[in-house]
Amino acid sequence: MMCGGTTATQPATAKTQDIADQVKSQLEEKENKKFPVFKAVSFKSQVVAGTNFFIKVHVGDEKFVHLRVFQSLPHENKPLALSDYQTDKARHDELTYF
Image 1 (cartoon, rainbow, N blue to C red):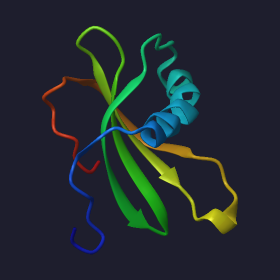
Image 2: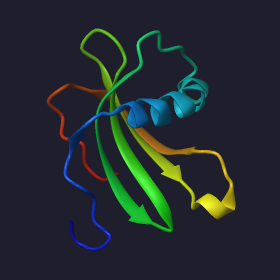
Image 3: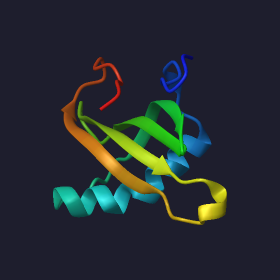
């Protein structure tokens, strides 16, 4: 990984699913809809002054969303924040920085 760059795409873990679950309500509020399916599929991370997680989430049928979630440094004691997201993604769409 180059300095400031993202890691390679990795399969989602239980921790990745937990992060996605914690920002699900933020996404539902922004999109004004509920996602009955919300399964993290893969992720990348980027160390900044905290960590950005880029997570591909299956939201039903053949639909996916890409999430950018910011986790602040532990001493800041802040909740996870949905920094940005992309909708209308497909399984084959590459998870990239956005």
